[in-house]
Length: 78
Image (tube, rainbow, N blue to C red):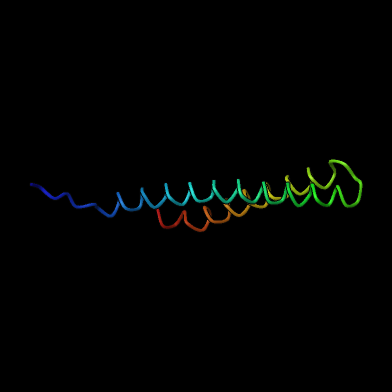
């Protein structure tokens, strides 16, 4: 029975995959949370889809901006 040892490059590759999948999860959760909050504000104020779409796009742009910032800081590690 042979034991294979993971090299440092393999660990970095797996780490990058896990980081990207976690960012995908964050984007989905944040967009649904902001979409729901916008829907509640629209019901409260009577402004049908205004806050719902505004907060949804705010969540998407904020998460993608944060992902870009994180990738920019990690680019030196690769």
